[in-house]
Length: 163
Image 1 (cartoon, rainbow, N blue to C red):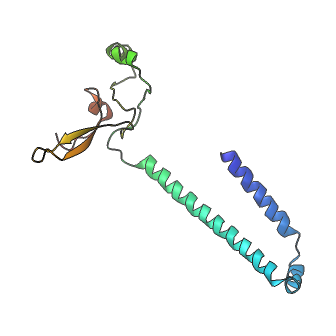
Image 2 (image 1 turned 60 degrees about the vertical axis):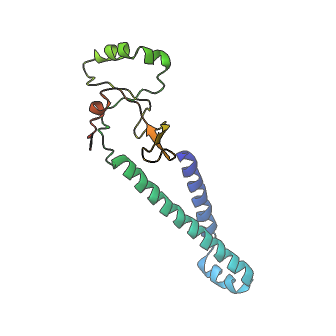
């Protein structure tokens, strides 16, 4: 993707450079009077459109840069350093999770091990369950659910507000 972007930028830059370098400033001013008014306005229109697209792309790239910076530096509410996330744990491994934890815990650099139903936080694959309100059983609220191992909060160093 980066290669395609650079390639298009270089090709379009070379085209504009060669196209504009063919014209001598004196000839351009002299021909201005001899050209039709429609052609002159059309060329100006194309230049304005090109500048508009250029400015829009510069602004969009700045916005994307700020969003990426924000996503990388936001306080997630847990310690996301030195974590290893294993995707795709199947039912066979879930049945033998205790054995898996025991074997992995033998490595001296592993401090803690935990598990959850979603590979990341915030949960990517939440399960929604209806919860009925005590005072009005006809109303229900959908609550998302994330099943975690008993030491999940300790492993991610999550600071609980209450509870």
